[in-house]
Image 1: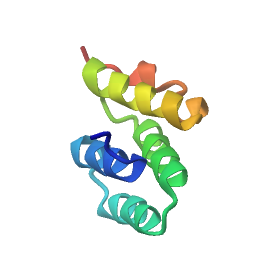
Image 2: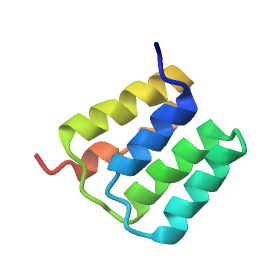
Image 3: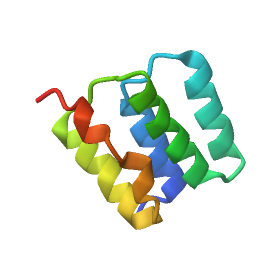
Length: 84
């Protein structure tokens, strides 16, 4: 069974390099209100703003979900943060 966008964003959040509890809480709050695209964009924006390192595998997961959700701008420039 295909996971919902909500479940996939939640899983990406769990695996994310985000360390700010406030940001994590905000993303979870958005998810709980059915704002999956905004939650995803918020998560990606903070990863970029905080210049948090991402693996090639994690970035591929972000890009795949952005493509499916029709939000390719969410992952723009995240490739600058690759660590491997």
